[in-house]
Length: 249
Image (cartoon, rainbow, N blue to C red; front, side):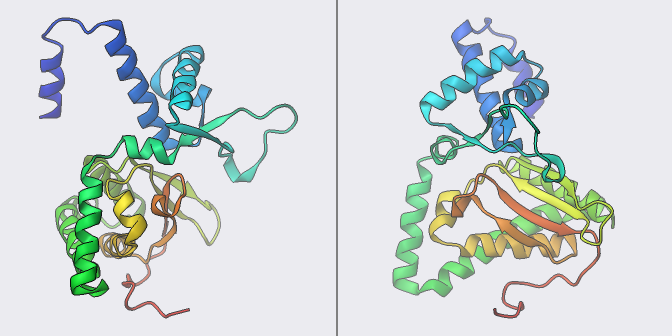
């Protein structure tokens, strides 16, 4: 359906330069959301644009407060060596808000009401029900991916992208006992709700463990101020537990 709508858009008059400029800027912001931290050169390579064109959009997004500078990601923690490091960018808190909707405030208010009148357990139950629905939607896609954890992780990322999570996967710790896959979510539709109600992050993590068949570990979240939600997925099969079954620390 998405392809059909995309082709329908090309049947009308050609959009003006301002519209095309805005679309390109949105692509730059979405790319940074999904893959950041990214340098101007990296964005240009991913989108097939010139670095000069990308820098113009980066400057505009910086002025809007939609992105902010962050230390560029390097393989294995290696530095760039001598010279001035290239500037890398991630979405700012305001940038994430711009990708959301006014429904965030309504949802947060509703959950506050639920917590006040039915207690925190009711919020947790609601979060688990929401994640169970997500799990049910994704189950067939992950089952079709087979038993390989890496392939299943890619299938999970694809399912999350379809739900607006700007997800991607990256191999980590290759050749070591800690080899695994890092699942990154550069945008979360419930970020602002989860910032106040972490039950949503816990329930989602438990659902990921069950879907993948391994015990995953949430390393960072947008809700807690990080620029991306990061989940470590081990390649070795471990019994998938829930947050209620994990030993307290």
